Length: 281
Image (cartoon, rainbow, N blue to C red; front, top):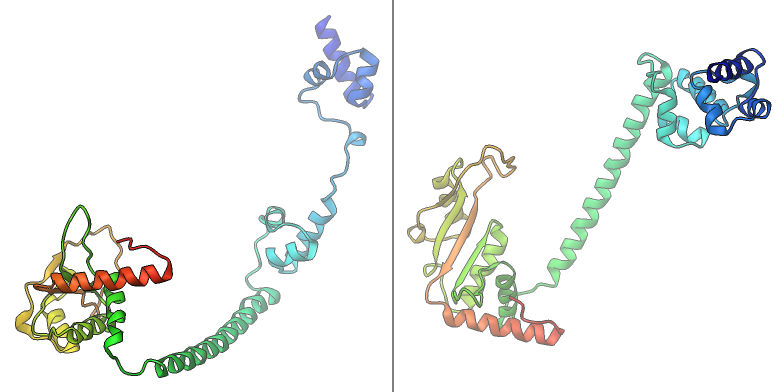
């Protein structure tokens, strides 16, 4: 009986070209049972519903044949880029087509010209703003001790409750910040012949050349430099601080600087109090 029923269902599909609904009405089968017996049997053409995007797919193929990009196709047809790509991925652009050639050259030239103008305007605005800001700096005075204190609190070594280290040690690779810190020390009565200096640099670099450069750049006594601290090179690390202009970091350590460190703590604590912050070191 089961074999006869299966054969009859398939005959109704293939010979009489009935739909699932019509077969169920003829045989009294349930939906799941009917689909099970029809597994592998294609539906009749008359029951197929046209897909809503068939026309768009055809249009996408035609546009691709004209040399249009996926972005252009998606924008013109109002579909997602991923959809447009799925429709035309089997149709690569003709590298020799005139449309493709114009598409490669024209946007690139326009983009370069546009960015050149942008960079020129940006650089001019930057130069003007820097000149305006430089004009308000003026000369340093006693109040500018706060500037040095703030710089140190941002970049210098600070004592912790679990590790007391009440001394000044400033580490940086920026000659400008280091020069400001040295100026701060001079205002506090500490000349450049008082601190100890040490270069921290990767072992693959020229440590001796770095020491000479820092001494010249900041007018520091070479005899106050201690042996350089060499960082181990790791082959798996991709480093960008290489080349002749890499000089590592300079470590400035001020001996017997406990009281000056406390003064900085006091200034920063008062600044935090005024601004409503807290002394979170």
